[in-house]
Length: 493
Image 1 (spheres, one colour):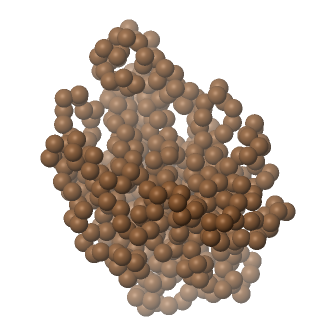
Image 2: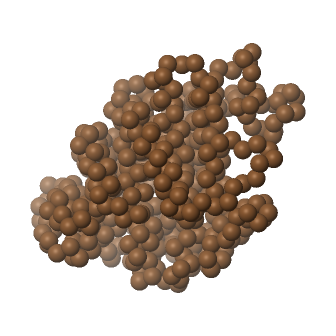
Image 3: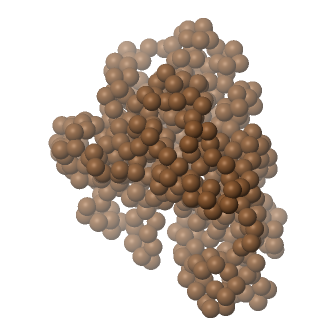
């Protein structure tokens, strides 16, 4: 199904080259207003195509490249990696010296709104579908979910942003920024509509539709929105529903979570599809793993998103997650010793490592660098830790401890001497334990920076952090200029 969706998307782009089309709408874009009753393209196919393109944004270069800089390099736990001169536009994230002219930030902002544009086009089409109500409702829920993901990402990074819930005409200007609270409220509204009509992960697996939005994925995004607002009860209700659903579990061993064999597995709440099979010559890969892959021997990538010595020192003695998350210069993998190049970084992210047995499969090139690796956007462990955090903040120490032990039990495996059970019922101490567990469990997974912001701990942890400025990234200057004064800049930029 995923390949079919992308095929339709490419076909539609190809059909967008007729002179009549170009006379009426911007080049390279299909527009819902161009559809007429005698059009040979079925609206259902067009909806699928728009949704496929929106999903594709999540694995695209702007989204991956910028997320590493904005979410990871801004923290002491992750080094930029690669060579000092490589990736100059993201070097600024390490020192927090980025400005409104930073290209990755601008690309990220644009990618989010491009995906929103696509979902708005899909929503316009869905209202005119003649399919059964159940089909229309599922499409509607999926589009609302994808749009909510993008608004969540935007307001997480930039605070209040323009909220666009329709396809703007050529002469319509970008609206002014809504407040962050207003965006949260709109996300809440849309996800509450979407959740009842989305399928479960297990249902998608049986219908060969894995990788699409699920009920638990929507619940998890909404739970995150509530965490930002410190609405602990609402967040707890949602994580409770996810846990009670039985659609996910922690059964997958930690060192197997990021392998090809466990894609769409029990751990996966939301996962973005990528592949590098010769399917009609259509590229469906992502550079997510390539960006982080070993730079040296074996040559598996560019060596960015490198774990720091600070992160290495943060693991408890004997924590198996350290060996499952970090590759060190000199480690032996698949029978070969890892040799870093002369860049000076000693560590690589093992969560992006591709086994030798996977390289070369399905017609992949001999020097394959993991462009087929799915992106785990939300893991079940993240949900369990959100549940523990909300329970702790509500004063329910026993519930928080139980969920914390679920995470640590999976991590320690069969060796009960490792990672002793946490027993403190002091809320302050327990809060610190939960924060540390998120740091380790989700290391290098795009969560740390925003967790520190949520907790009010960024100033004490991140060098050069300026309170009142670095909680948000700058609105791209190009967007402010295009808006002709409608958009305003964030403080400090």
